[in-house]
Amino acid sequence: MDGKNNAAEAARQREYIKKIADLTEGRGLKYLVVTFGCQMNERDSEKIAGSLAEMGYTPAASEEEADILVYNTCTVRDNADKRLYGRLGVCKQYKSRKKDMLIALCGCMMQEEEVIEKLQKSYPYVDVIFGTHNIFRFPELLYMRLEGGSQIVDIWKETEEIVEDLPALRKYPFKTGVNIMYGCNNFCTYCIVPYVRGRERSRDPKEIIREIERAASDGVSEVMLLGQNVNSYAGVAGEDSGLQDLRTEFGLEPGAGVTFPQLLRMIDRIEGIERVRFMTSHPKDLSDDLIRCFAELKHLCRQIHLPVQAGSDRVLKTMNRHYDSAHYMELIDKLRAACPDIAISTDIIVGFPGETEDDFMSTVELVRKVRYDSAFTFIYSVRKGTPAEKMTDQVPEEVKHQRFDRLLDVIHEIQEEKAAADQDALLPVLVEGFSKTDPDVLTGRTDSNKTVDLTVSQKTMDAYGIDRPGELIGRIIPVKIVKAQTFSLYGEAV
Ligand code: 5AD
Ligand code: SF4
Image (cartoon, protein in one colour):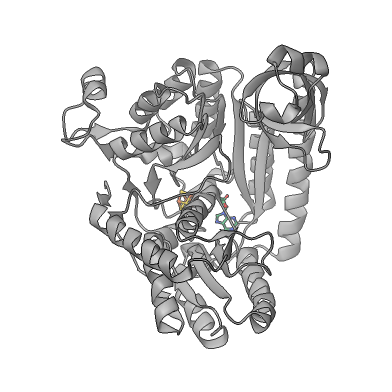
């Protein structure tokens, strides 16, 4: 489904932004948006911050200092839920000291009915509550709270709407996330995302291209295309698409579908964009055309996040993943054939209901075969309302933890072996800022998304014609790796 763009709604919300700016003018109010969870949430938080900035709020240094505190929540595993309630307890104390402080909650957790009931009953001091489908309505809801006085709750079950052209404030000036689609249709049996983020809606390709062009003209050089399953992106080349040249070049008639690889080819040509990444990909519909893009496109980073979840075919089936381990390995082989040095990362769940020792060992075996550059491992967590919640053969906690630790050992062993390969390599690095532990050291990321700490000699600074290393932030520069460790690379700018 391609989502319906609603420009009138964006204009309405801009009116509320103006009204709040008038209400709060001259008061020097501050905001803080705290984000839990994935990069989708990170991007949503940038949008909330963008609205707040246009309302005249400036960033607060701490939660306590904020006049408005927004928690953008996650519910993919239950530890995320617990963290929020803990934070809210502390907020009550802040509010008792600062009466006008506002607390807003949004994100995936708010799409769960029990959560809303609990918040209404036990957390009356929360001011504004909204969900994932109506995030664009934040200015209006905040205005209602400022005018009306009581707790505002607005949760939508579903939406087809996509509201474009609202403000967003980028966390980094040189890189940004760009949503290309929202929602998920896959219903993996363990996962709550389809219930809290709704069905798949793809953005109009023209809007995506425009957003990236604007970002590039603001100095952004790296974009991360975001979607729960970018491989099923299904855009439509509109009548007035402004993609006239691209349409001719790519042979797209008005109304023709635009696939994810086609979208990537369009983005690859945007002036000023040096690096393009995407996440997440579902193995069941990773096409040969997409694999070709890694060989062909100049700016597509040689990196893919391809969640496998499990190595046992029986478990993959009960997870409703629609592929088996042989198919997954075939994809890995094709990716490496198209792009030999591609960095591959994954997500793995251990202790899914019914997982036997043999099933678990199949996961270990797959990990050893693929030799991931990095792997995010999760202990299975029961999510209410998902099919896996009702599966009777839940794995005991201590078995889950023990398997988790064993898997981590295997992953680290492989990472250690692989890290050695980067020793003495010359890698292009996008410099992102200063190291948190040493202000004289810069930090950045390689094409394959590994973090590198780097130093800059006086000679190199002279060659770049700069006085301070910080002037390299936002630039892509060659770095010689002098020390390659499992989780970190150290290098010298050359
Ligand atoms: N328990 C544990 N991990 C989960 N994930 C999603 N749902 C669950 C769950 N119920 C993991 C998957 C997914 C990642 C974002 O979170 O590995 O890819
Ligand atoms: Fe969840 Fe599966 Fe959709 Fe990913 S593809 S968001 S794991 S249901």
